[in-house]
Image (cartoon, rainbow, N blue to C red):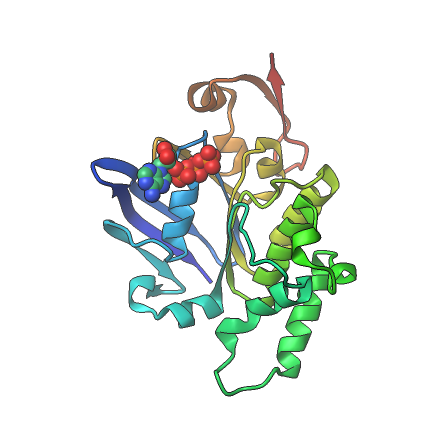
Length: 253
Ligand SMILES: Nc1ncnc2c1ncn2[C@@H]1O[C@H](COP(=O)(O)OP(=O)(O)OP(=O)(O)O)[C@@H](O)[C@H]1O
C-alpha cells in the first residue's frame, strides 16, 4: 500500500509545526524520518496516521484520502507505534497484544482462530511469547517497546508508522526490530535518531528541519557530510554506500 502526503501543514495557534510537507512511500518501502529534536517528526507521523487533522494538505493511503475513511476502517490497515506509549495497569502482555485485534472484531463476534493466530504470530515475531502471562507493568522499557510493536503487528496492518521504535532497546533488539520492519511485507514510515541505523534499514530517508522537508532520497544521496553539518550541526565522515550495505557515518568530536 502506498502512502502519499501532499502539502501537509499543521500548527498550534500561531506556531507552524509542519509546513508544506510532501512525501511518499511506495508499497513495501521503509522510509526513515530523521531530523533534529523538535523538527516535527512525531507531528508528521500523527498526521500521516490520521491521528491529527492537517490544517492544509492531504494524506492518501492506497489511493484513498484518509480524511474520507472511517477511523475503524483506517485502523484495520494502519498501525501506529507511538513513542513511549503507556498502557493501562494490571493487564497482561497477552491482553495488550490482543487489543491489536480490536479494529477487526465486531461487538457480537467471539474471539476467532484468525485473532489467535495473529496474536501468537505477533508475540513470536518480536520475541515476547515467553512474557505472555506477565503483567505489562512489570516489564523493562525495552520489553514494553517490543510488546507495543507486537500489538501493532497483531493488527495485521498494511501500513505501519513507528515513532522512535528503538528507544530503550539494546543494540541487538534495535537491529532485530528494524530488520523486522524492513522485511515485513508492508509499507512503513519510521522516525529514527540513529542515522547509521536509518542508513542500514531504510530504502529512503526524509530529513525534516523546522517542520519542512530539507532533503529526501536514498540514504547515500541524503546523508552527506554537508547535510549532517548544516541540519544536525555535526562534523562527520561518511564512507561506503547503503546499497553496498557498508555505509557508515563516523562522527567527529
Ligand atoms: N500540541 C502542541 N502544542 C504546542 N506545540 C507543540 C505541540 N505538539 C508539538 N509541538 C511542538 O512542535 C515541535 C515539533 O514537535 P515534534 O514532537 O513533532 O518533534 P520531533 O521531531 O518528533 O522531536 P523529538 O526528536 O524531540 O522527538 C516542537 O517544538 C514541539 O514543542
